[in-house]
Length: 249
Ligand code: SAH
View 1 (cartoon, rainbow, N blue to C red):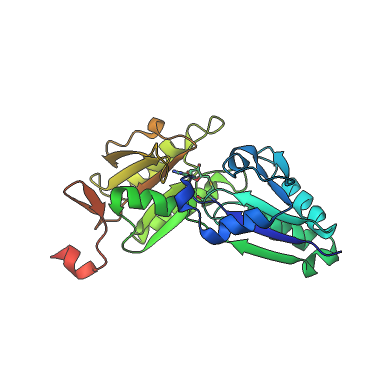
View 2: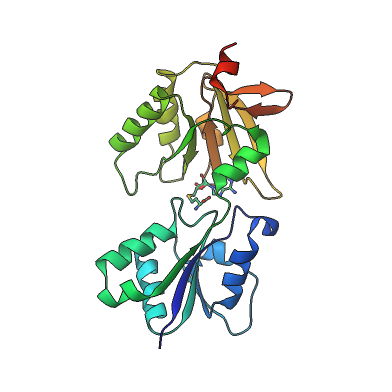
């Protein structure tokens, strides 16, 4: 009996922002595995089993999904945004690497989704129009020293920086520390955007600059974008020109 496992990105929230391919992968599954808040976004289907779990136990959830697939079930692991961006897809492959040899021949697929960074950028214009990078501020899985090293390198290279996981109740101070570090390396007028619930009907944007940016407005549903030296406003939009030459003129 061979099952399958697909790791599905459901996009930032709005149903229209989920791809049709993700929708059909969810509809075909016999079992859905994921964090309860993400499972709640998936319409109920008769006969489909749901395995809701706590957000923190990614590897356990990954092993559970792999065991279900190995037992013949067609499993969809549900992830918000894109499953490959700070989410479940890497956890699944990590579990495959450390687990049962037989898991390596399972039918495993990844179904992409619109990640928060893209939904957030679209709310404000085109801040990711030039070169950019994404950094998660969560230090659950890596040290704060690593995060600081990457922030410094990104500032030095003048990337636009998308900050995922900027804050949570367990980690209220990190975004403030990140801003303090960036203030020593970048212009005070650098645009900083707080985009909450991007790509949902509750989307909210706070536009600020590095000097004024108030870390306490960010929560777990906020994506923070810190501009490059060329990022600027035009009317009510914010964008980063693609051309370096144009920016210098
Ligand atoms: N796989 C997800 C990211 C998971 S990390 C993706 O691709 O989007 C969780 C972080 O993503 C949150 O703390 C927040 O920073 C960001 N995030 C997720 N959904 C968001 C949304 N709708 N609006 C703004 N930020 C969001």
